[in-house]
Image 1 (cartoon, rainbow, N blue to C red):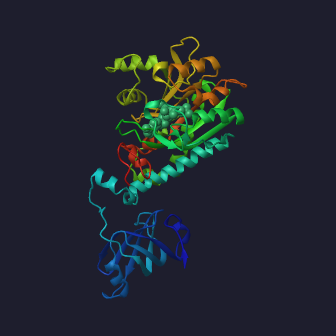
Image 2 (cartoon, rainbow, N blue to C red):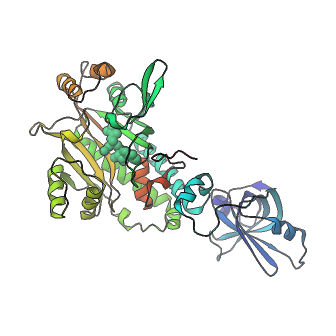
Length: 430
Ligand code: 4AD
Ligand code: MG
């Protein structure tokens, strides 16, 4: 008999197939026994029918516990009332293992308990739906950049220098030297962009952020495009196109999962380019009108981001930040040298910053000066300065956080559910 996955079951109507999976739930009613089985790709109701109370299959059924692993063989029947539209009429049940008493029962559990059991929690339907969407999101991002001729460049994870400020660096030993886990592939991307024109990297990044919020992970995944000769406006357009593309793809391909998550997709359907663009100064004024206590020059925090995103019903791009709150590599504005050509794109519905990026300094002297002002060790950046000596050009790029984007798409309250095994402040188990 052919082993098939539940997501493909519609192709096997009235045929005999084998399903390998785990018991999600079971119940009996008179002469019928029901097993709700999951195989990772979906759930299917499977039934056994017999007039004899002591049918051998019924004895096996009685043994089954939640999450016991089984192999079912039977006939696929169309069943309008079953979720998914099909059920399996069981002819044979093979037990692979009878599971011990499963800690995650259908009753409610607290988050600390679920996080301790993250390795099992992943099996539940909602967690499954979120991570199925994650898979599609990553594929959509890759398709977007590959389709536009970007070259994928894998940047290193062990690095000798900081990209996003020295306060959030994870330090480690590198033989007789110090090394840091990468906060961003950007600096290396600037080199590959000069070698390949337009590039992107996609990998895990690390921030020893002491902030315990529902938007921060210690280890998160980021896609970072970088384009030689591109300026701030070009990179905003690219980010808008990317966001519109991935939302379109998820709405098209992940309807079932969005339904499981009870996501109202109306706000996502409104996501169209161009997004409203405001400067930091505009944002500051809007925040004041809303009663925010933020001082001019402060980095807008989570509450400020939420206030701004409540004003617009699509994502919004904020540009031209005070240079003191942004990284050393940001290109100053030619008319307002106190401001830099950076951009943050905030999601709608209060989901905060999805994208951070902008135009990079391409002038050697200016970059040298900024490295000094930031007290960065020049020798670690010698190679980076080289890029400003040999055919330097204006260039721009950004980083989009996968988990932030997924939280928003799924409307998940806390970012910890958007990655299989989240790394959180002081928490590394499991
Ligand atoms: O704004 P960030 O720090 O920008 C950079 O790292 C640039 N070097 C990117 C570039 O220009 N190539 O981070 C970019 C994005 C944020 O907008 C956010 O989506 C995500 O990365 N991010 C985090 N996601 C989860 N947890 C954290 N602690 C995050 N920090 C940043
Ligand atoms: Mg940022």
